[in-house]
Image (cartoon, chains in turn blue, red):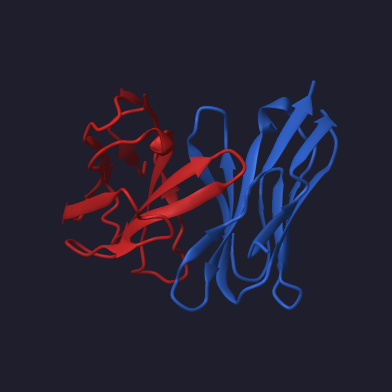
Length: 109
Length: 115
């Protein structure tokens, strides 16, 4: 079983819809990252959080440490949000970073 | 603007060739990482370095070596490239000087094809 699981693996939605991507993990962590990867390769860090909630523009990330779960929300989704979204956790012991396999999001105009 | 720069976006090499992938960061970060990314497998750690001249094996180090002679540069070396090393290679860096950040910065990736 993977230590970091993301759902869904693929998501297609219409422009304007509210999007939720989920991440569950099974190890103790010191931080959780949400990353975005557009076609062509480059990965951009969206959020790093260890508790609570963070907001940046139309993106919101939440984490529940007790339940070992995080969500990434996109409000008023737009075709330019189409990308792969990756959840990654930094282990509390040893500092190793473990990546989920990503969620491929496609927003239709 | 912070930057992680990988030397080549696309490379095509032949089986048995020696391949160098270079990564440079301008943020004075202590930590640098090399990952490969394959469809269905996500990002897998090959090697990482916490300081100059220090290196640690990641999850899939076989067939690879690394070099970190200067703080800003972390090189990945394929001594004898094989077709199963065809992949997207991503370099990343982070700082541990401020434990509240530790944000990861990635390069644009190097897509290697071994024929």
